[in-house]
Length: 135
Image (tube, rainbow, N blue to C red; front, side, top):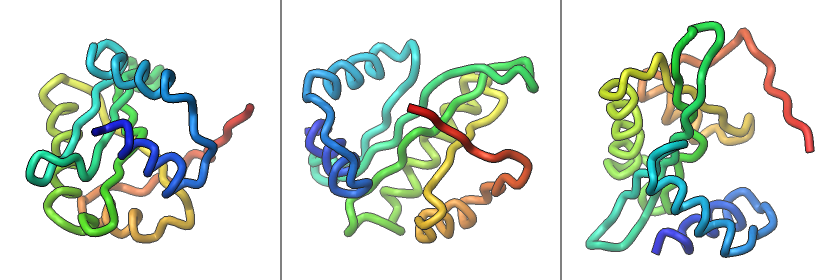
C-alpha cells in the first residue's frame, strides 16, 4: 500500500515525524484528483516499491505553469534500477505532454546518491538560487 511506502520515505528515510494517517490519506486523495498534483507509483509484482510526486504551480519568471517534483523515492533494493529511472521519466514525460514550462526539484545537499542519479538523467543543477524555508 502506498501509505506505508510514504511513511517509509517520511519517517525512515528523512527521519521526520510521522504525520497523522488522515493527512497522508488526504494528500493521496488530492493527488488522485490531479488538480494540484499527481503521484506515480512503481510496482514490482503488484507491490509498491517507489513513488514520485509532482505538485503544480506557476512561475512568474516564465509566465507559465511548472511542476515541482516534491518526491522521488524508491526502496533501497530498487535504487539505481529501471524502477527509479522510469519514475523520473514518467514525471518528465507527463510535464512535456501537459505543456509545463519545466519540472524543478530540490534534494538534500547530503544526498549525493540522488544527485548522481539526477546528473545521469541529464538534469541541470541550479546555481542561481538559494533555497529558504520557514515554519
